[in-house]
Image (tube, rainbow, N blue to C red; front, side, top):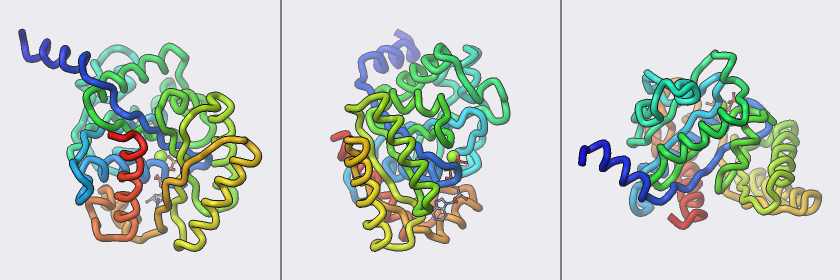
Length: 268
Ligand SMILES: Nc1ncnc2c1ncn2[C@@H]1O[C@H](COP(=O)(O)OP(=O)(O)OP(=O)(O)O)[C@@H](O)[C@H]1O
Ligand SMILES: [Mg+2]
């Protein structure tokens, strides 16, 4: 048996990874920052048990944002998997903390909106690449993009990100509503990003969860809050995840807590 055959067999036999999507209504609320730091924190998990094997997928297929945030050199991308010119394994790039990244195409119009067949191919490729790993984190495009909603329906847990801004919370509510309409039994989590402090964070999180329960008759689990932190700004400028660039910052601590909650939710 060749090494490739053995690897293929191992992958078929391996259990699927926990699939987690990071979504949110409004652009620029920190979805990619949350996805990247969640993935790297779970892969390095300092002081919280074993480091996990993590796959991070850039599903912002029109604009690609993770390479800008994480500073990896992208040779191939998921567009080639969609067009069947590359196998998903050959697209993987190693990122910080050993995270395996599936990069997106950038600025290619035809990938900005997919048909049902193409979406299925992307989801199959993600399942294939993450089989035998512990966790796959999917970074989704902004807003109620049809691809974003379709990918959200495929995951075990969808994390809705919002900032304290009223417009962002209203958009997060709209995304939550659509997600619950598509699959009422689905698991949702809420993360408040760029919070000024614990009092504001708790108040807004509690209110959001109460509104979802009351008007949508659904549950969304509080997964915590990330402070607005200059360490994130510096890390983004340096194209590094804050959990690696400034591990003792308040934001990095919050991302590690988020990672431990997400891992606990999947009991992996
Ligand atoms: N907790 C934080 N503290 C300070 N700055 C932050 C924080 N979270 C995100 N940012 C900054 O906000 C900006 C937007 O973040 P990001 O690209 O992650 O948002 P996004 O929701 O993925 O955007 P898009 O909708 O364009 O994909 C970045 O410059 C990032 O550094
Ligand atoms: Mg983004």
